[in-house]
Every structure is written in C-alpha cells, then in structure tokens.
Image (cartoon, rainbow, N blue to C red; front, side):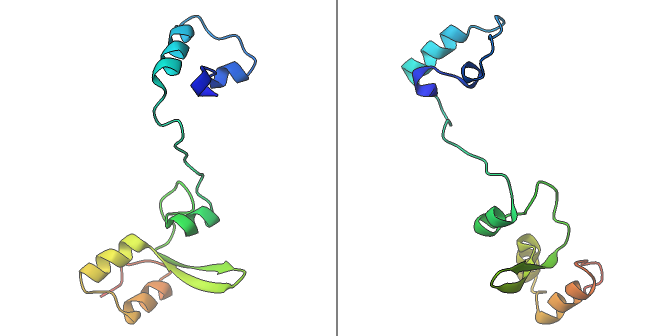
Amino acid sequence: PVSKGVLQPDMWGVTPSDRWDWGALREMIVRNGIRNSLLVAPMPTASTSQILGNNECFEPYTSNIYSRRVLSGEFVVVNKHLLHDLTELGLWSPAVKNKIIYDDGSVQKIP
C-alpha cells in the first residue's frame, strides 16, 4: 500500500530506474501522505452511464436520441445537453422529439 511507501512499480517485480530518487519519494509519502489516492475513474459502460448519467464511451454521442433495451423493457434516451438547450429555448415538444427520432437523431430539420 502506498501509505507504507510501497508504490505500484514495487509490486511489479522490476528494478526501478536510477533516474529519480524513489527513496526520497517513499519517505515523503510515509511522512505526508498522498493526495487523490482513492479517486477512481470507472470506464464508461452501458451500466455505469445509466447510473452516472453520462455517455457510454469516450467518443462523442453518436446520436441525440436512441432506444435502449434492457431486461425490463425498452426506453428512449435523449442527449441531456440537447434536451436542456431545447427546453431553455422553448423548443422541446413531443413533435420535436418525434422529428428527431424520424431523422435518426439529427436536429438539422427541426423547426
């Protein structure tokens, strides 16, 4: 564990480079602790995106609106940023939603 001065390379069974002073770093960690050691970045998946409300991957959204199928059924997922902007502009309506669905997620033809 890093709190004891054991770093990731120490667990790999490799000889560390002499380029840096690893001993001094270990001493500083034992004495002062380490910041952000417990932060995690879960990989975006269908499950985590549903829980966290983000995209399923690192790439940009592939569509502004799509259907998601799960064990309990199928439901429509709308790009939350688009929904927010259209609502703020007073443009969001069932007709606009249906137009975006009809145009495969494109917003180019909405009135």
